Length: 136
Image (cartoon, rainbow, N blue to C red):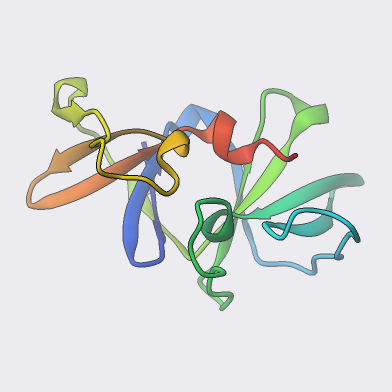
């Protein structure tokens, strides 16, 4: 799993769902789009929509600094999307048995989560990348 920070919390998504990790680049706004869609950027001649993952999950806009990254994900080259995150941490491993369902008390953003895992003394939130990356 690829671990990243978003609003001070640690999230993960499967490494095989991340095609590449980009440094922050110029993003061109697109009018009349949801507020979580920051706009588009160019990636080797293709247009890549970029989603502010913090806003998508219902948080305040993500921080944009030299440690911010865009995670490029999507099923194929024609359906790639970028997810803006605060920082990429590392690749982590943990047993599937350590993953627990998202508690019912979580209201905001629950539909974007697959579960919560405990690793050492930390809680790690598993992101459902297909749902979080869906625009519309």
